[in-house]
Each structure stands twice: as C-alpha cells, then as structure tokens.
Amino acid sequence: CNGSSDQSESFDRIPPIQFTKLFINGKFVDSISGKTFEAVDPRTGEVITRIAEGDAEDIDLAVEAARHAFDHGPWPRLSGFERGRIMMKFADLIEENIEEIAALDTINVGKLYAHGKVLDVPGAARTLRYFAGAADKIHGTVLKLSKGLQGYTLREPIGVVGHIIPWNFPTVMFFMKVAPALASGCTMVVKPAEQSPLSALYYAHLAKLAGIPDGVINVVNGFGETAGAAISAHMDIDKVSFTGSTEVGRKIMAAAAASNLKPVSLELGGKSPLLIFDDADINEAVNIAFGGMFFNKGEICVASSRVYVQEGIYEKFVNKLVEKAKSSVVGDPFDPQVHQGPQVDKKQFEKILSYVEHGKREGATLLTGGKRVGQKGYYIEPTIFADVKDDMIIAKEEIFGPVMSLMKFKTMEEAIKRANNTTYGLAAGIITKDLNVANTVSRSIRAGIIWINCYIAFDVDCPYGGYKMSGFGRDYGLEALNQYHQIKSVVTPIHDSPW
Ligand code: ADP
Image (cartoon, rainbow, N blue to C red; front, side, top):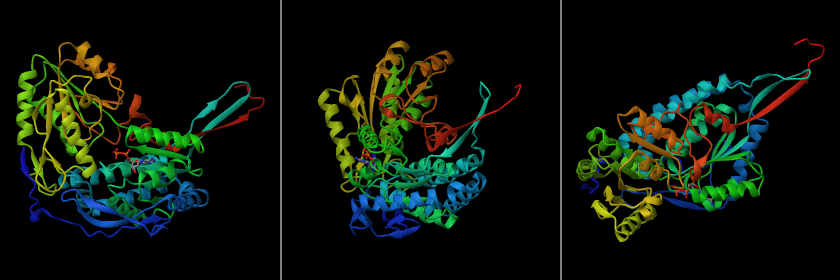
C-alpha cells in the first residue's frame, strides 16, 4: 500500500471542542468526582482534550433525571406526531452542522472525513426522520376474544433505557439506539465508548436546541467497568441496549439478570463469511470483498473477514485483490486521496498487529500488508492472508482491523458448511449470478443479514442484528421499535352480544 501518513498539515480541520462535560438533566456538568480522562487523536496519538469521567454516582444522577422525565415529564405523554416533529427539528440541526460533527468523529476515531460527511452524519438525520415518521404510527391491536370477552393491546414505552455504545461508528450507533427509543416515548442514559466521547456531547447539545425536554437524553461518558457496569446493574433502568464485544455482552446480560431482570438487546461481534462463486464477475467481486473488509479500516462488526473463493477463479481473484490492496492509500483521514485512516487507539493497533503475528506463526501466507504505516499514529497496512485454515485463530476470532483471511472451496455445500462453522452469526455475503445458489445459500447461512452481490449495504429501513453469539434483538427498521415497548393487554367482558 502507499503509506502517506506524514499527516500533511493542510488537511487538518480540527473543529472547536465545545463540549467536554457530562450532559445530565439538560445541563453540561462536571462529574461528581471531578475526574477527567483523555480524548486522543489516533492520527498522532496526542491528547485532544480532557473529558469529564462519569462513574456510578453520575449514572445515578442521570437515571434519576431520566426517571423523572419519564414518570412526570411531557415526553412519553406527547402525541407521537408531536415527538416526531421535535425529532425532525433535531435532524435539521444535525444537517446544519454536518462538517463540524464529521470532523469531531475524524479526530476522535480516525474515520475518513469524507465518509463522516456523506454517510455517518447525514445518516444520523435520516435515522431520526425515519423513526420520527414512525412515532405516530405505533399501534396496538384489537382482540376479539372468546367467551364474552373483548380486548386490545397498548404499546407503551418501556421506560428508562440505558444505551451502551461502541467507538467504531460513534454517530451511527448513537442514533441507531436513540432514535427508536425517542420515537417510542422512552427517556434514556447514553454511555458512549471511552475512545469516542466527543460527538455524543454535541448531539446532546443539539437535542436540547431542538426542544427535547430536559432529562430525556442524558450522556455520561466514562469507562465500561465503572459507568457501563453501573448502567447494566442499575435497579431503576428498565432496558439496556448494547452494541460491542461478545465478552462484554455476556457481562451486561449477567448484571441485568442479577439486578432487576431488565431486558437487554445485544449486538455483538462477528466473523462474517463472504462466499464468491466461480460465475462471479471478478472485478466486481474484488471491489465488494475489498470494501467489505477494509471499509472503516476493518473496524466494523460485519466486516467480511473470512472470504471463501471457489477454486475456478481463486488465483485470478487473489491476484487482483492483492493489487487493489497495494494501491490503497493509508494516511490522514482528512486527506481526500486517502482510503484508510488510523486504527482507533494504541490498544486496538497492538491487538491487530499481534493477530498478524498469530497468522504468520500458524502458517498462513501473508500476501500483502501486515505492517505499521509511518512512525506516529496508529496506521496499519491493509493485510491479506491466504492458505488460512478454518481452525486458525485469525479465521475464528474477531480482529476488528484491516486483516482478511482467504480460503478456497470446491462446492456450494462445502462453502455453506464452512461459512456456518463459527460461533458468530451477524452477516454474510454471496457473490454469484446463479439465483438458485444465491437463494439456497442465503437460506442456509445462520446470520442476521445476508448481502447478495453487495456488502455492507445498510438502510435504516432494514432490520439489523445477530444470530448465535452475535447477539439478539434488532436495531433499525420498524423492528427496532419493539425493543423499546411493552405490550399491555386490556380485557373487558362484553355482555349479551351475539357477536
Ligand atoms: P470493543 O471491544 O469494541 O471496544 P467493548 O465491548 O469493550 O467493545 O465496549 C463497548 C462498550 O461497552 C463501551 O461503551 C464500553 O465502555 C462498554 N463496556 C465495557 N466493559 C463494560 C462492562 N463491564 N459493563 C458495561 N459496559 C462495558
């Protein structure tokens, strides 16, 4: 790959950092302990600013505010139409500030500025508008019961929600969780990941400007073992929605069970297979496989990290893929010529490089990449291993970085079996012109989303979530609203009716 990480000053567009405190009950406040932690720029490893560090006692305050807003405030009591109107305003304000917010995510997690500007931040407005439009279409059902009874169901907001979110898509994750919860009439406490505290605070500020009442959205930055754990164990939180690692998902579920049995929804890790059949257009397959793996520097839970290629096109496909990887430009994510920015932090950077060493030690063939780019920041070359065996660590564990494993297969049956040979079940892709193969494989793979002749094709109208140890519950789509509702049945006798 073309290393270009000399971080040319001309691409620095550091936005002003306006918000660094906790956002509780409509106000920016210091943490009770007064502690702060560093927000770091992964382009350089340097500290951007210090952020108020929330702990269990700050979570208590935020939950108290959210509880008050739920039990006594206007938000759950407004008509769905009125909630939707305010959410639309929130979306408008995001659109007025796209560049500043996109730049915040770029300096905080190394995301390509161009992607933030055209995908993540406009997508946040779109997600809000989608759920705003749904807010006045949330209905129960009328039940004609037997034995002289009739009934109906009410869909009621579930209450105070705790959202615990990861760092790889700070903006997308925030709205994936917050928008359906808002539409449903819930109030909430959001804990962003400690690596990515900045944009969530900006969104809290815009929510207030849009007219979302105090206490409805609270943002408490802090660490997982303290602030995050306090959410999952809280007795007064009615539901936790989590996206992150399988390991932490387990802890959250255990803490929820041990406290007040709050329901949880978990969107966890993945090791997603992409199956490329002999009849595929090779150039198209290379583009899909490359984007599926290296989009967002491989820091995406659905990454096509296991690529199975049918033997007839294997050599040709691999040569073209490696060529593409070598021409990929790694460097400053503000630079429009750059394809891949830095990994989020030092820990992730070192973890990825240690997986590369594992791959080499286990006998996989390193076709390209595997090294750091530049001397500062957390840049890694797009890395491709061939001759990977299904039981190697690099084929089994989620690396969450730009490292692809290539495998060869003979028959569709074999490919299905090997694709399913994983504890995960988040996503899968199929590239073929044969409709029958596409249909058979998509029904046979146990994963929450299947992409045929495309990959990482998300839409807010398309439910998203995992099978197996990739979790349960669905974000996006109208399905997402189910996470934030209780269903209450109301039954009454109906006397002397012949019907
Ligand atoms: P990743 O591996 O992608 O960093 P994690 O699962 O570690 O993802 O983190 C995702 C989110 O979960 C972050 O907001 C993090 O602070 C939070 N978290 C980490 N540990 C815990 C925990 N024990 N309880 C609750 N939340 C946690």
